[in-house]
Length: 187
Length: 195
Image (cartoon, rainbow over the protein chains, first blue to last red):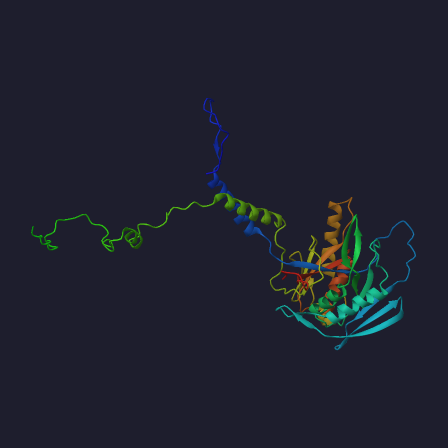
């Protein structure tokens, strides 16, 4: 058994050698392992963000003049294709069609749109306005859906919009964040 | 000298019982082997120190992944979609849409039936009031902090966009503009593990 032997000790009053009680220690560790295994959280839940873009509470300072920026509108109402529309205010700058090619993922009936993700990444690299790591704003994407579209389809498209990533300064560190911020069109 | 005849087994004296089988093999080392007398020592020492090291490693790993907040409450009727480009969960009010019922942190907060019947985007008053009360309570409890305005929607994968947009808009009007959708985490290509 494990022990601490300090040597000598024949003439002293008390013995200085000690035995560590290993068996109770192992029992304690096994209890701890069992408890932690039982209470461990194995879920793989996460979240995907969206921004409602509603005005915040009124401030005392006069509002800054908002510069019109390019926004990427993702139209997913068609059965066969997506439409990517770059707009500045109400002015349409460019329109791109992307075929709707769902690719199944996993065994739970999920799918993704890799072609759409690739095209959105290309478009952001060509037209994105907030690409510097020091830029605190993100490019805006607006999702247009049909009322009858299934939620799983919406998530697959939002996932594709979030595929391009850019550097973002958080304090002294630089992190990778999605290049776009997604919101819904109410029309 | 005349060789004596061995006694029949009925006339032999009573002897001590013991092993008889294979004990008449003349070679000693063979006899030891076949009779089972020359085996290895049966007593074994368990290597306790490596065993304790192993247990300590497991304990440290489990402690590192321990979550004091417990498991996230997921309604068993809700089948969530999965996505790749996701972020970690955060603590925020949870709005679940199960069938036609809307729950906020497990408590009923309206129905989606009116939206489905009218087939148009509209604010859900009951949900609006519950979320607004939650926001005011948070502000009373944390008067010096800025309200984060985060709400997490737990929506079944088959729910229609009209319902999702109505709940989304209601949450935004109630003071929660940062809406997140709860999803399962899909492993990115080239990454191990995942859902």
